[in-house]
Every structure is written in C-alpha cells, then in structure tokens.
Length: 291
Length: 235
Image (cartoon, rainbow over all chains, first blue to last red; front, side):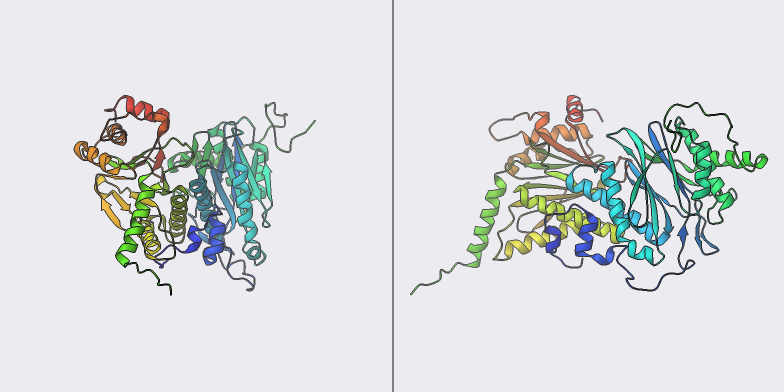
C-alpha cells in the first residue's frame, strides 16, 4: 500500500468479491491463509467462543450470544461479543476459535459491503449465505488443526419477507434451519430449552425472553457458557432483524429481561416448565409431527 | 532517408491535455455543494443504473465526469483501496486525502507516460467530518492535479457557466432543500437560457452527517427530490 500509483490489480475489472481480491492481491491479510502445515493447536492455547442461539418470529429473526470465552478450563473473557451485524438485514454469531472467528466475521462484513458498493445492489439472503460458506470452507485447513469456526447466520429475507437462518459445519456446508437453532458448546442444552419454549407465534419480546432462558439453561449445564453476570452488569448480546432493518437491543432492555429470568429462577431453578398438553398454536413447529 | 519527426515535450503534453479535455467537455457537468449537514452531489444523468456519483466509504463519496469505462474502473479501484485499508487497519484510518492521493498519482503517472492514453476523466473525492468546517472536497483533473476546493465545485461540460452561477448565489450553511435547488438551477444554467431539469433526469446523492448509520452516503430518490424541490426552504 506504500506504492503511490494504484497497482494494476486494483484497476483490473472482474471480481466484486473482496475476499477474492485479497486472495489475489494480499493473501496475507486473509484470516485463513496462515500456519499451513504447523502442528495442531492445543485446546487451551487460544480463546474459544461458546453458545449462540437464534429464533425466528413472525416478521423477523433474533440472534443472541453469551459473553464468555474460554481457554481450556480458564475463563479468557467475560465480556466478549460474538454477535456481529454483518449488514442492514443480516447478522452472524460464532462458536469456535475467537481470534479467527472475529476476523472472519469482519471479512464477511466487508465482503457484503464491498459487493453492495461495487454492484450497486444488495446480495440476496441466499447469496450472503453462500459467500459465508465459501469463507468457512477456506478455513478447513485451520479447522483440521483445531481452530474451527462455526457460525450461525440470520437475516431478514426482503424478498420472502420473513426471518431466516443458516447453520454451517467446518467444511462450509450450509443448512437452513427453521424456527430455532443453536451452536457452540452449550448448544445441546440451549436447544433442549428452545425445543420446549419455542412457539411459532412468539412476538419480539417473548422471543427475547426465550433466547435469554435458553442461554441461561446452556450456562446452567455447560461450564464454558456464561450466564447473566448481574454483579458486573454483563448480559447477553441480542440482535433483532425485521423488515425495518437490524438493531442491537440496548443493554438496558436486555438487562431487564435477564434480571426477570434470574429472579424467576431463584424460586424455580430449572426455569419455565412446559405443559404436557399438546400446544394448539398456528404455524410450523420445527421437527414437529408432520402428520 | 526518413527523418523521425521532432515533437517538443511542451507540444506533446499540450496535445495530450487537449485530447483529454475534449473528451471531458463532451459530458454533462457534475456539481458538489457543501451544505449545513454535509456535501451534496448532483448531475444531469438520465440513466438510473449508470451512476456518476457513488459511495467509496463510510464518509467518502466519489463523483466523476468523462468516459464511463475509465471512471468506473477508477471507482472500483477506490472501493478496493478503501475497503482494504479499513480491513487491515481500522475504518477510521480510511481518509479522503489518501484516496485523492492515490487517484492523483495514478492519473498523473498515466498522463505523463508516453505509452498510455491519458484518462479522459475528472473526479471529485468528497469527505465529511464531524462539523461543516472539517468537510473536504478534492477535485482531480485528468493530468493528476489535485485541488482542495471549498463551498462548491463543478466539473465537466459547461463547468464555467455553472460555476459562475454558483459563485453568484452560493450561501454557507444552507439547508439540504436550498442546496439542492441551487445545484439543480446551476446545472440547468447556460449562457443562453435557464432550463429546468426534470426530477427523473437528475442523479443526486449526499454525504449526510446526521444519518444515524455508520455509512453516511445516500442517494436521493426522485420522490424525495420532488418533495425537497417543491418546498425549497424546508430543512
């Protein structure tokens, strides 16, 4: 970049992908092109991000993440942020090696904005999901060395007019999820919680409550997931996307919901108890009886 | 025996400059006007798809006149440079000055090298700061000269008569509506007559520091232009 005249690569027509441009012109800036051939990294060598939950509600989608990062049995960070607004209508959260994940999310952000500026139009939601797939696939080598990144992408599809979400595996495989999903070390517990609390007709406030309950349940049983930290006033990050665009819920809003969740658990440590009666709600229940 | 023609360097440069100037003079003008909340760019452009004004980065915009393929190439290069800088350093480290410099070096190097056809383009790089006093407009010519201009700037076809019109009527701290009305009137002004340009033949974009988003660039839709031009004193 010290060269005065713009190098030829900048003036070459062709790609509208920022990642492809970097791969061609400055591959050392890509988060995924390092350490080829080195030994696998130990579990406690770098911080890991843990649990992300996401759920759709009529008119939008919500994604939330706890604030903990761990290195082996140590808590590496109590206030890490794992939810990123990737553009106006999409957001992502990640579980896995934090250093690489943060950079990947940043690259993905620039990728979307770059495309928008060069093409003068916004990528479709499926297009965004496919671009993230490609970025994750490039990280496969690092994933084999123990530095996996598993994101969860949510967004409001302006064409289909509904919230959608995609989960990924380390090979870049992408899977559309309906209703709710969770990734990370506490995801087993969060998903169990979501399974019992999720209803397709939740409104935004109820969806926020369900997400915080699910993160609480994940923190309850997974040591790598952090619960609401009342004494330090550290609460989950919640990002909501609707037809009006995306916004992060204010710390105060999340604090109020989290405080209510914590208070209700003082009397009932396991949280809300699902009824044995069959729910009679309209809409699709993920994994529900197809008959 | 054939003799190679001798062409003096002055003549060579003059010919190249004349060539570039002729290409640029064929196009319609683009104006940039500073107003209270930022910078407004306006041009007469019947195409809704091929833009003369576009976004480079959070607070930086690009405007051009001349050959479309050439300035489109330069625009993409600017987006790449800005995004690469912002990605490898920080978003705040992307400055209009650095972009204007890169453009100046590129235009200048091509202009003075014998082997390449000079660019038939002129560019504006506009950047807004936190207050109107920090706003910058850089004007770049085909030969790589940079000028740091204030208040208003014009380039392209009828630049001189448009600039005269603006010079007589420009007022600092104008509202968006007033700045827009002035810019549109200036674009329609010729020595012979004043035309009024239809809203759907206008391309207008602003860098607006009051936008809550990080990206301050926004295009004004024909509907928005209509309502702004209908009541010129509205904020």
